[in-house]
Image 1 (spheres, rainbow, N blue to C red):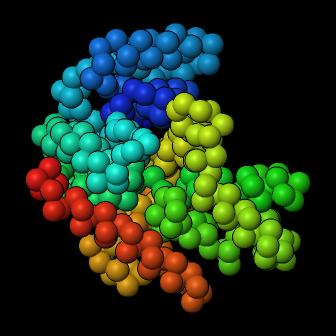
Image 2 (image 1 turned 90 degrees about the vertical axis):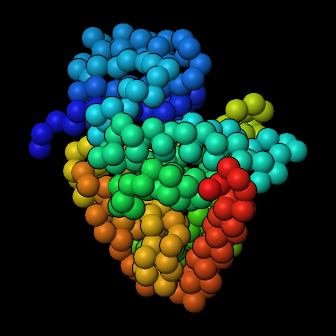
Image 3 (image 1 turned 30 degrees about the horizontal axis):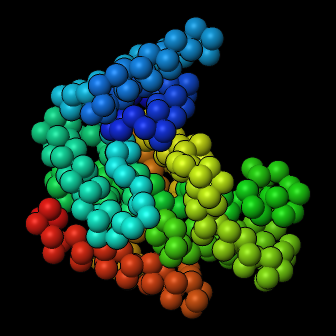
Length: 316
């Protein structure tokens, strides 16, 4: 495998900075560029990361910039820029503000990095991924979003905590949207092959699912200011590494459905195989009746947000 050339991370906040650190330490690319509109922020974080190279032994060149011209020649672009929803802010407000940011970046990718594979993490992620795809003009398999990898990691940790087992031995898939309408597939969840339904009661599983659904909010409430970024960037780094190293990993991600799961023209979290080309294929799994209903509710939630987006002048 030829080493990946260049990764560009758009947004140098807690997510962008933490992700840059993880990817630099993983040494998956020759060059990594952190981009932000705040002068000094991406440059300072990039320099701080770069100065750890002699200790950690990575060779990736890390630099920061305020210019979208640095997208030129990028192999992978990660969109992290955007605002979190704040008190008093409607969903339409959040969509408007983040669409205005994501739209500019998607235009820049179309102009300067049309061959890139793009991972979107800006919230609401399924809608922003669809918007990025539409604005960039890139084929759908090269634009996808972080989704069930993060929810799945939280779910696996809570299961491991409840059972007193190693988190790495817990396998789980979470489909649907990231957050309120996520769909944990309990039939595909196990500990070293032992189904969770044989290890935990229905009430224990219900509480774990609920805590997973509220996982981001739990962190926000504890921090008082700011939101989670350690677990999210671990999830994002797993996806980026799968692309960079052409690993053909089977992971949940927000992917474009064109008939899979009976849905068309929408981005939502499903199991996919991820490699250097992006989403190589969507894997359809058998869902129970309740899981099908929950998945359909997820899709309806995404379509409702897309409807808000397309009705606004900034959504065209």
